[in-house]
Image 1: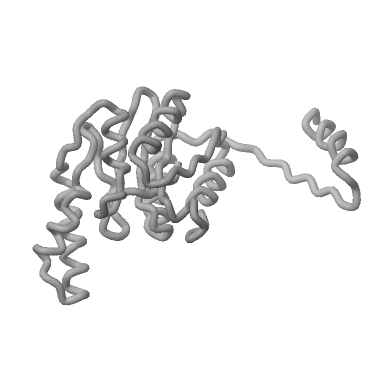
Image 2: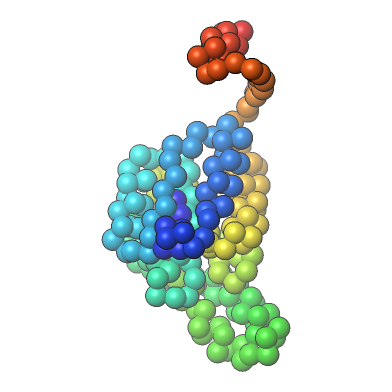
Length: 203
């Protein structure tokens, strides 16, 4: 699930959904759906509820973890899980380190930068922060049997943070063993291809 008005009005092309769906499908995980939601609290919460109602093994969320008024992922996730937002000490430490680095590079006051970013340390109670690739920590939470991971929407940040999550899931044996068969068919139409694929499936 991805959030952001910019994904709906044509300003930004979605690369995060394509990346995650491709990686998961390639590792044998059935991708049940991909939703893109604008920066609207009610719709974001409703989409999260809908996704969790299906009790998936894994729910990935991209976007909405910044410092502006329309960054609503943590807040909506807490609402849907029925828990309050709480400042997580580990997230505070991550933010302090990252904002200090940003301030030093840009010649800014580290304390001022940290205070502006501090709301990013608010996580749903019971959740844990994912180490950031940029400034914003991600969120790892659980709802029943569903593992939830939320990432910033900046593509390079999401890619790097997903790599760490993927490695953790690999260690836990989350991914099934997959056998792939590639069939190349040339010069025929779809109606002729179908019987070929049916024979391959039986073999």
